[in-house]
Length: 107
Image (cartoon, rainbow, N blue to C red; front, side, top):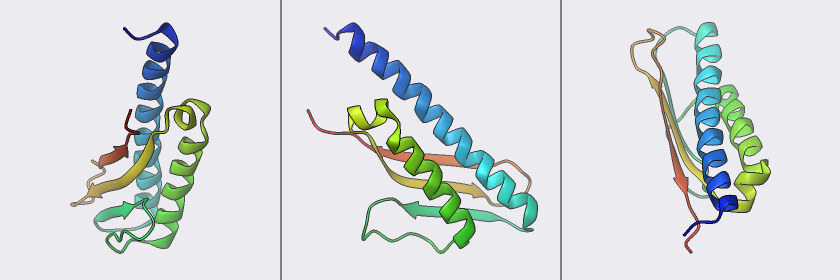
């Protein structure tokens, strides 16, 4: 049975994940407001793994958001890491799909 602390951390982590994904969506939306055309961001947070070419400013903005997520005490204590971020607005209509893949520690 999970302890109350583990349950609290699980709820806090779920909330932090939701916030992270919303912050990424907002960053893409802000970038999109200054650029015309479709947006596609596909980036791995794992060193050595490639991703699709993306605007350097958008990539750095998303990296800063992910780094702040990783520094959160609940996230660092649980060992959860962002593996990959994908954000797409293929027809530039403002409807942005964000997908974040996470790595969870074993054990």
